[in-house]
Figure 1 (tube, rainbow, N blue to C red):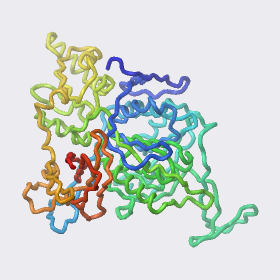
Figure 2 (cartoon, helix red, strand yellow):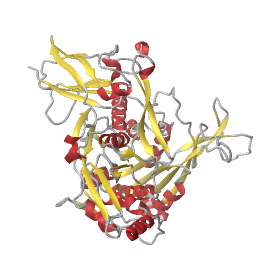
Figure 3 (cartoon, rainbow, N blue to C red):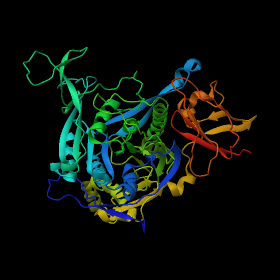
Figure 4 (cartoon, rainbow, N blue to C red):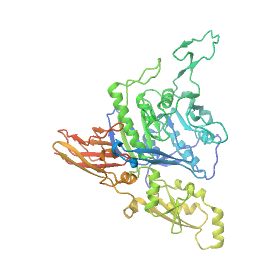
Amino acid sequence: MDNVEEYRFEPIKGYQMLQWHGKRPFTSTVYYPAQHRETYGEAVNGWRNRIYWGDNLQVMSHLLKEFRGAVQLIYIDPPFDSKADYKRQIELRDKTAANDRSVFEEKQYEDIWTNDEYLQFMYERIVLLRELLADNGSIYLHCDWRKVHLLRCIMDEVFGSSCFVNEVIWYYKTGGVPSKLGFGRKHDNVLFYAKAPSSARWNEIKEKSYLMHDYGFSNVEILEDDIGRYTVVHLRDVWDIPALRGNQPEKQDYPTQKPEALLERIIRASSDVGDLVFDCFMGSGTTQAVAMKLGRRYIGADINLGSVQITTKRLIAAGAELQESQLKLELGDDVQAPTTHYTGFEIYNVNNYDIFRNPVEAKDLLLQALEVNRLQAGNLFEGEKDGRMVKVMPINRIATRQDLNELITGLDYKAFERRKAEHPSQPVERITLVCMGHEPGLAAFLQQEVPYRLDIEVVDILRDRQDLRFKRDSEARVFVQDGYLVIDSFYPWNLLSKLSMEADSDIDWRQLVESVMIDWNYDGAVLQPTVLDIPEGNELVAGRYPIPDDAGTIKVKITDLLSESFEVEVSYG
């Protein structure tokens, strides 16, 4: 990490501070490089939107160099600390020939936290979000009853309590039925802060307020529609917006997806056409899709590769719809639909870690490959092997000293004191840290922070990966025949394993495919596909594509239902 550009930031002074066990100040970060991997669509007014795959802490550290103080609107929907595993259902396309193995669930992420690591996690990210936010910008933090009280304290600490604008209540009718005691929980909380309330972007939005009785209004215009008589009033802080249902066109089958109507209201209120919108907990890409439709520019990020693939597919479809039909949202009688849409976007990843699709899969595969005995969920350590406690550091990024905070604060120091008294010359604990790249001196820092002798081992997967077998790479047979690019077969071994199928199973390989993308003139660095074969519903990819006359080196990307991709280059001409 030597000679790396560093960014420092000072806390706002004079405001109350929330304390938690193991809280550490977050006053600086370093620049992390990003690799440009794919490009879709054309730039508009010199701008292409950006999607990042990687840990959002490092993504934001990367963005500071170019976008510090440049983002007009931030919306985030972070984990709620719900103690739940979030899954999505995977099912084969065109299941007419499939059996009961054609459907299964895959875990997307775990919303399970130990001790106060959740608060430190959010605190560090909120600090960086403040640095990215423009002086006239606003931030909306989506949460619920579990942590809203604590997150508001952190927001007050980072932004200042005078920057608080509203706590918006999103009311919905689904879910929230109590088991024994209490009222049904039927709302989420959205904390709205402005970096400088006196100069923040603000577009007044009005709504219909239906009259239950005939009041004697003298200076108020009363209107009527199919529902009844109403007046037009300023939008209030309780929003009655239906939650998504499974049969809605915008539904992406992604856990925790929010309705476009919710994001439309936020983006319209706190940004103008052409403004930059940022969401670093991207999920299914709702923020990005709505920003595009409303003529805003956007940047999105997520650590889950499945999120990036779903968002990519969604944005391609939204961009095509805008370009072909000049789609205009129902913005209201007094609002003009934007005439400029920023439909092009680029895909980047930070630190170039593409072994795993998401952190949940990474942890499971690492523990399996290292033959670690798993411990119960919620334990400080993930497992034990050969008398050593195993801690898996954050996946898909370099492990830093700050990543050790949870471990340092969660250790059982009373047990350490007893062990030291019993065996003064022996280490009180043997610990193995598993990571994918790490700062120098990681083990030394841990020993320095713990006032007891430890036996620390660091297993770096990037250094040792040749000794481990995580999973079998996908394979495909792709060739040129009679002026066509032909995909003859495709074997996504990880998906086939989850389906308990063999290579010779009686199944059309196209049932396993989410998309095929082809760049006819690959430059050796960035995929710029002109063929976007992304079938809807139970339709299948073509598998056979006419080659244009000017084709050169052909790059093919086949993405399966698990969002894992197989890429191959084919020479032509």
